[in-house]
Structure formats: structure tokens, C-alpha cells
Image: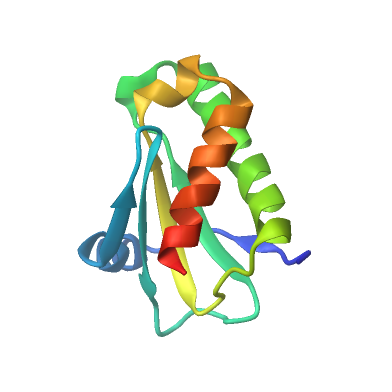
Length: 113
């Protein structure tokens, strides 16, 4: 899969996903659900790192890691394009290895399907 990642943009979209289903692990919480007004040809996902995690450098590092992981995960498993995803990072992501985080997220995404 080499599709474009499309971020959620409207406040209503975030609120609708926060009301939907969720899966948590020690690194992230993934909210997912159907959004009626989204394009099913693109991968709708947004990454959030709260200010509590650290300064802007640390938050951007977490978001870069997550984007990279989801690009790789998309190649390994088939992702449902009719779902939209909201990934909220936890502070434990900052101090752990990339491979551990990747394996945990891969298992979480397999649970969704």
C-alpha cells in the first residue's frame, strides 16, 4: 500500500472519533470509527502528542516516529480505508526503542481487524 496519509482537519471529526471505539496499549491509544464525509481511497489518520509529554522537539519526534511506523505497518497488513484513526501518544513512547513500539502497534492494529 502506497497511499497518501490524510490528516483529520475538523474539530467535529476529532469529537466523533473520540466517541467511537478505542484500543490502548502502553505507548498509544487508538480511536477509530467511520466518518461519513471522508474519502475511502485515502488513509485517514491523525497523530496527537499532548503538551504534558514535553517540549515541541519531543512531541514532534514522537509524531515522526508514529508516521514512519504507520507507513511500514500499512505495507505489512491490509488497513481498512473506510475507518478513520486518531492516535494519541503516551509519555512512555519517548524513552523506548523504535522496534518495541513498532511491534506493539502492529499487534494493536491487528486487533482492530
